[in-house]
Amino acid sequence: MKVATVKESVFVPVVAAEGRDTIPQEIGGSDMKRDMDVIRKIMLAVQARTDIDPRLLKVDGLDDFTVGYHVALLHDVGLIVGPSTQTYDTPYKQVLVKDLSWEGHDFVAAMANDTVWGKLKQSLSPSDLASLPLKIIKDVGTGILEQWVKTQIGL
Image 1 (cartoon, rainbow, N blue to C red):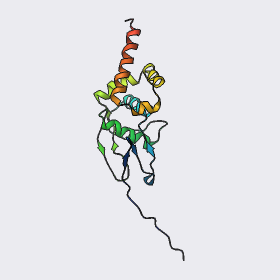
Image 2: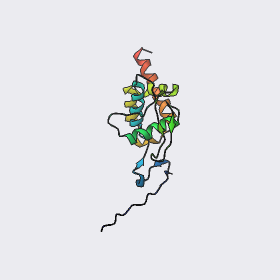
Image 3: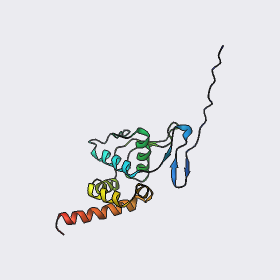
Image 4: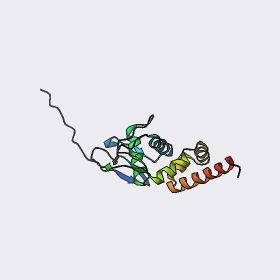
């Protein structure tokens, strides 16, 4: 007669190390860093919604874990509005996205412009973009957008 072995379940807490969030391998995670391309895609997806019904966000080309992690970051800094909950089966809080906040709309106004985004990505490496404070990225992006608008209207 064979005896089945049961792997003991172990709760492993989420650990913050060296300025980045690390999701332990034991719970299916990996080293996760803020990715500004992902942030931009999420913000554009929320802006494109036609309703404000709270729900988990799905973004084409991105897995649920990556979206959920970045949505939680955006919710923490007040760019996305919606109720949230923390459960034991996810290493980040789940946010039922309703809409962008006022600040979120301002941020996406600058980042949605391909000229602005292109200049930021051309001038800064992905690791620079990931490590800079969001406020600086928004302020620089808004400045680039302001210059672009002035050239468009002949100022």
